[in-house]
Length: 250
Ligand SMILES: NC(=O)c1ccc[n+]([C@@H]2O[C@H](COP(=O)([O-])OP(=O)(O)OC[C@H]3O[C@@H](n4cnc5c(N)ncnc54)[C@H](OP(=O)(O)O)[C@@H]3O)[C@@H](O)[C@H]2O)c1
Image (tube, rainbow, N blue to C red; front, side):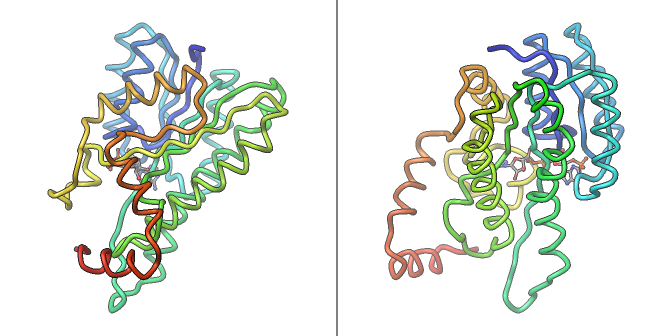
């Protein structure tokens, strides 16, 4: 399967930018979203050099009316999307003595609700065409409640379970719901974590993701080293997990 029209959120840097360029190289038209307009414009110019149509739809993905308007405009221009990648995301620490509900709410709104807003805006058109792929950029960090990143872990666990339910519900409608769970990818989001293991470049990660999306995979977990580590972490009994996790926290 190759994609003709794709919408990518969080496309101004990192994984989203690499995904956009990889899809452009493969001849896919692009609708790009993020907040930093200048970066989106530069990326759009670069992607157009591959001969594809590219438009930008800047907005805050946590602003539901703005997302609905952007999605509507993008649908009017492109007609339909056969791929939508909900990639916009942020990370933040949560410490008990600095517990900040506003910050936690903002992160959940960007990472989880943002993907749901875009889904709500794009799903009717996919249902009408009985085809399309929705892909949520989750993370292996959603495997358990990881120390010091409660909101990030929760947002990614939420994304994975939400889009797993959709995967089941959308099967009979001809629509794929895909969960992408990468390990550490070299982008701004892990700049605070110089000891991250098995780090992969964003370009390589984007190639793996698009290859697997084109093959019709519905769960994309990589690299195998981190995915294996995560399987082990998941299997630990709580008493052991708590001891190890509290010893290695930042
Ligand atoms: N890097 C990793 O190790 C890793 C691993 C697993 C999963 N992920 C996930 O991959 C996704 C991309 O992250 P990245 O690693 O590529 O980091 P990044 O370079 O910081 O990219 C984050 C992207 O999300 C956009 N974004 C953030 N808040 C937004 C908002 N409110 N509205 C619209 N766009 C927003 C940013 O654009 P603007 O600032 O211009 O809005 C940027 O384009 C995230 O969901 C992250 O959780 C990353």
